[in-house]
Amino acid sequence: MPLADLNRNGKAEALVAIPYENADGCVWIARGTATGPATTGSTNLCGSDAGLTLRGFHGLFGAAFPGAHIAF
Image 1 (cartoon, helix red, strand yellow):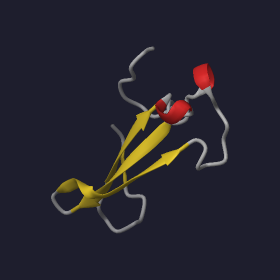
Image 2 (tube, helix red, strand yellow):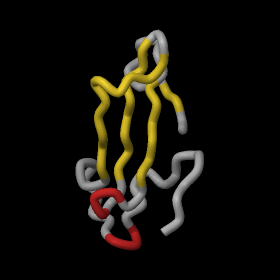
Image 3 (cartoon, helix red, strand yellow):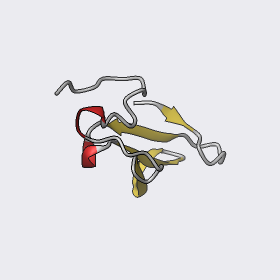
Image 4 (tube, one colour):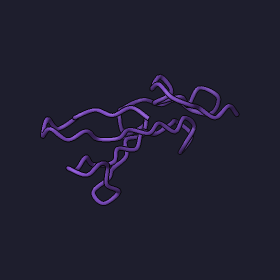
């Protein structure tokens, strides 16, 4: 699971990619706090939200993130 300070507040957000979720793949972002990632205030971004239309076998939005992936 990659960590990145997306909003430049000095606290790293946790990013989790879920290829094939909602057919096109999604990335979940857990808000960073002083004590670590928090689920309150988390959000997601799916391929269709980013203007991509990747469906079925090609629904790999977020698959390029490092870490473990589940093979289907």
